[in-house]
Image 1 (cartoon, one colour):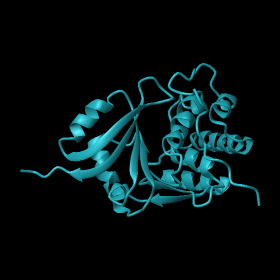
Image 2 (cartoon, one colour):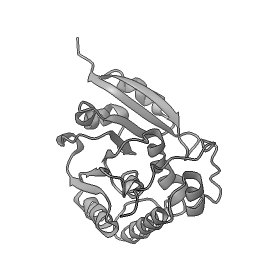
Image 3 (spheres, helix red, strand yellow):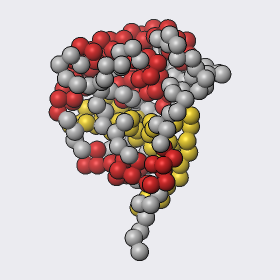
Image 4 (tube, one colour):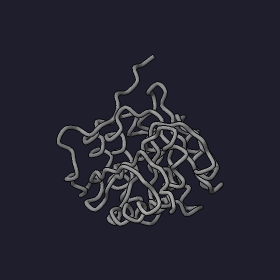
Length: 228
């Protein structure tokens, strides 16, 4: 039996100044030290995604050109922030970002499992196809995120909902010990301020590797604000 791959993390010096011009599979592999097998499986995911995208609206027209520089890089950076995490829940998993990317990169590590939570049945069919084709350590849940009671190391979401609503979805995971790592855009500080009206929490923002305006919001110790 071959040894499990080492945790994926950016090489020293790789940070928010990654150049996006011409950033593809080779550049991602160089930046993160991904194996040839991981790159091949991410490419298979690419091919399945854009095959299915001809029949259902999974991603927008710019996604193919930005697959590595925006979508894969955006997803993979979560492993740099939580290098010891083995179990993830991706809420509103949709087209598989970040969950499918995480599953590809965690494959082979003992105890790794990614829960892909998606309420739309047709998107779950796509996710199940990818998980099966690539034999990924992932489970697809056709359910509302707030209805599940999963215990994971990290709960995450990308382009799912504003933070106030997202914390409603994520609270069952957070109260069971998960850390929240949410991929957000330039309005994240506005979202944090708005969410603080309904929730108490600790937060930390990390600049995104994939976009100068992006941030990853780390959220923990969440509880509802009691109404007076």
